[in-house]
Length: 146
Figure (cartoon, rainbow, N blue to C red):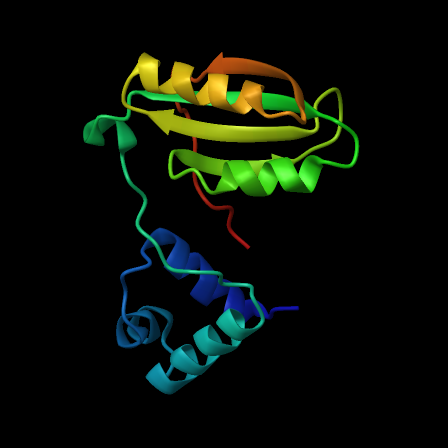
């Protein structure tokens, strides 16, 4: 588990992952060595998976964002998920419970690209059915504070 200091470091990184260890240390009134060592430990434990930028995909021309639910033949979930996950337009892949087996989030520049992608997914021999919903507006999309 993590302690209060780790939580403070993580929350600072969630706000701005570009901050250096020195900048985080100054913000939190810690030593730079402490911050760097704790970040390394959090990374080695897999708590911090990677540092990345949050993009505005709409400004990059990716105006089509959709949630796609998929039903697959029993026992083939991992195979289908791994195949779908290789597509660079797939933002997220989830193994879920309920009426569907897999949920994915995709982003495309055009409806034609989305259409082509959906046809490819449905043509997979293990995919039985898909259900697609377009995302009209994102109200919140951020990491949760720990």
